[in-house]
Length: 612
Image (tube, rainbow, N blue to C red; front, side, top):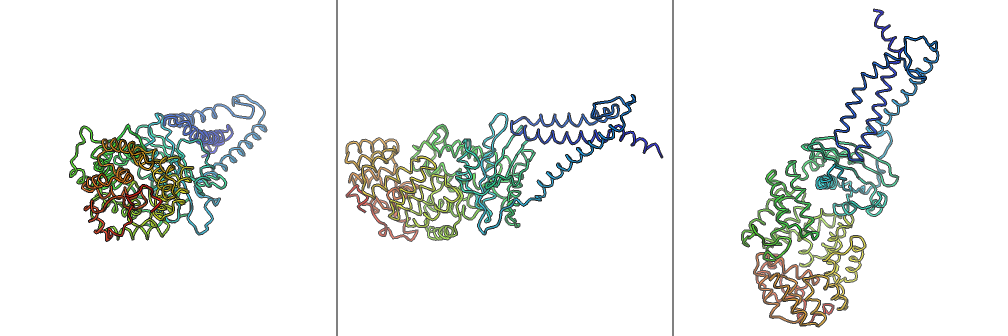
């Protein structure tokens, strides 16, 4: 029975215990440092695995060396040789114990602080929502070809958090505005006016996914929470919900059952559908930003792939429908959705597909606000306007709560401003500017609504502030042109109209250059026989015959009434055509309970809009 204690005594005397503990502590530190550095330099995942394997293999080597040699402050000593320095060895052992204990205590303290938050990092409650920006996760994959994945994860985390009333979450466009820009975190926080910022990175190697996320308090730069997720790509949907929930918990936001369910149900539960949708979304966005190397048909192929995996994916259905209005309004002349080999739809086929997409998007949309916006689109595009009064009231009540809307490329605000609900549109736009100041459409909608309320100076102010943040945008030009017309500056208005190809004819007409105006109008009409902006050019020329001809042509189209609403939105909600030449449009107005004679007209007797 005395052999076992003597055996342990030999191990203690030869510092085997100390050497083992010291090795484990050093190995742990190496792993932590490697974890940070390898993530920073985008090293492949096998490097970390190799480090761990080598360190584990070093454990028995350490034990053998410690047994065979006595480790002291003077180096390794052969225990078979008498040294006569037992006291020094004992002293060294005590010092080693203290060092090891200190490192272990530090490690335990750091672990506990990270996991249990002994230090109170959360926000001091002040009664208002906590402001938060989720910045685009960096793609640090070796090939750098996973930005669609990192962007998609960012957006899903953002959307999950945006559903919590305790948080004011900066919307996608504004958060992504700083992607790949050399701007410090402090500057971003100040520009977005947020208390907290989420940043991180994504690295994908085959089916291995590594997601690093940090929550930072901007006032002092304190890292409130951080975590590293090493998962398979099959767990991608689960991990994004875990991240959102962890961030909410770190901000002391208590989630109830419904909120947790909302986070989990955002988007889709199919990884394959999610990946296809993200790729399609990237093309969809690039086309709407002016990329002519792609079309909405290419994006639709990817949305269809997503829907083949998950037929209930509302966002995929909704974005898939967008190609058809562009196709129908231009008879395939719109470069966003052109008529091309393999795409030669009849109007009936295009309308049928568009209707199916909208029906599916609405039936599967989980967010009530998004669903209302989608219903406005369906109502106007499918010419069933009887629901508009009900939908307008829902939109008004929602806007009055101060809630911002998720970015949606739809027709809601155009319909509101053209049909006498500019106050609601202005309130919606101002709400959205609180969470999405870098989305150009929010500034454009604010300016357009101001024009409809006869506030051209306010419109110019919105546009100038918007340009300072996001630069120029083609729709900004036409809105500012109208503002200057209302203020009587025809020449300045014409300068802004000249910046848009479809409005050059109107610019010439306003300047009294009739020959140039007619030549430009003929060229525009040759490209697109349904170009609604030409109504304004012919009206400015006093050419009622061509105004009536073009009005009848557009009105007879499948989505003609929507195009005529667009024309009205260009001239502050006025009617620049003879309603008697647009029987389809008149019937839609009556459906919505709007008396056609109540709409203010833009006189075709003069081209100077400020006389209205």
